[in-house]
Image (cartoon, rainbow, N blue to C red; front, side, top):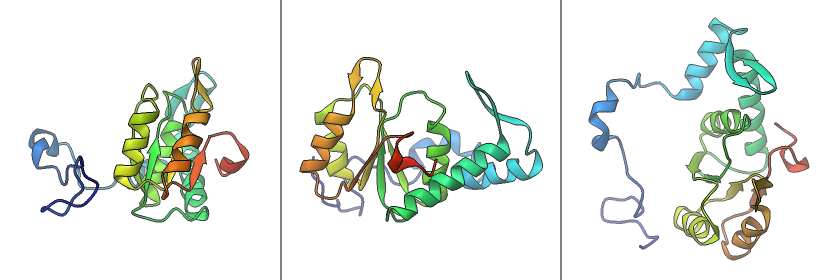
Length: 171
């Protein structure tokens, strides 16, 4: 697979538009998800938006957290249109991280935590990702070492971020 744009103007492996998802388009309101979150936070700020083992998080809390993530990403120099690999497991941080990326205009490259170094490196290089968001560990798998190795060989990958650490203090 090549990393150069194809005749249609997109990189191989990336599907432009929603033409292949016509049945799903009727559910799409045409409004960006961050706008929907912000509207829900205005209309029903105290209503639970996210239920976790640690308790309920309201729409207002989720909206504020998404804003902190968005500002944090932009503060690191990650610009609208940049791509970020998100390899987080099913954890509460995933939701505000995703909304923060979308609010900042950053393209999330979602991948499963089970993906290994070769697959993530290929995705990072193919997409031109400038950052990677990983857990420190997921189960018995160390994600930090492979992510650092990928950053060493992927010239555009400038940040390896682990939610909860100093570099992610904007959470």
